[in-house]
Amino acid sequence: MALSYNQKQCNIKNSYRYGDCIHNVEEITPADDAFHGSKKRLSAEWWYFDVLFTNGYSVHMGCRTFSKKKLGWVSPFLEIYKDGKLEVEKKKRFFFKNFETSKEFPLIKLLDKTIIEFDYKKFKETGEWIYKINMKIEDCEANLTFISTAKGFKIETEAESWTVASPKANVTGEIVFKDKKMKVEGVGYHDHNWNYTFLSALTYGKGWYWGKIRSNKFNIVWANVIKKDGKWDLLAVVNDEQNAFYNINPENIIFKPENYIRDHRRKTPTRFTLKINDVVNNIPIVADVEMDVKDLHYSSVLSAPYWRYHINTTGFISVDDKKETIDSMQIMEYLTFS
Image (tube, rainbow, N blue to C red; front, side):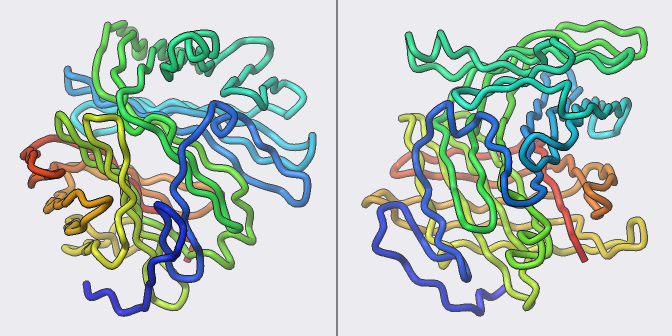
């Protein structure tokens, strides 16, 4: 895919112009991952967690809110996969009156039960980002601890806001489903979106591809926003083992979806290429990654078609003079409003 649109670097540290928007990648505080809400119009806000466990299972879970001021609803969700194939899918919906939260730090309570909580006390003592998830929906349950191992960041625009609070985390705990109870450990991820309205979908983009790529020392969070004029807004943020993040110039990113199939009457790609070749703060950063679909899970968000991919990922990431190869399973998604 040739990058056909003109994108220029802005005079803001760690900031670039992506299409019509300036994305300034910034450091975060716990308040960035707390509940923001909406006063002007009905807005979607969600906390997303996923984990790839060492035993072949994986989990996607979190909570979505749709609200304006103090009216709306809250929907927790929990999905469990085995080798990329969906085994359990659970979700519920609660009126906003049953929802308790905080604007200081991440906290979600439903019917007086805490299901997502950030360890704010530990953060103030040590600076660590630790999350406790205790979610039970019917006979399906996840009790997990996320300990972040990579520096979080945020991107805020007029159209939407996004914080990647845990680009990579060590995860331990247990999951319960189908009369099974198992201890688990693995590598996880957590982000949080807010200020997403119907106006965002109309003005910012008609959908996106999004995912992350991990090696032992490095981590890439990437996205490709599909614009209504047939163009793309690309972004990638790379974490290294020194607890730093690097915002990649979109002119130095190539993203290519290919090998399309028909799935749920939609043209859906099953192979992706991501290439990065940039110098950030005098540090050369290069990545060349191929992503091949192992399995697809089709769903919908606000009636918009949505696919969660489990993908076999191969290639390499290098930062400065350190290079690591990749050969592992990852999770990504594709959503379209058209």
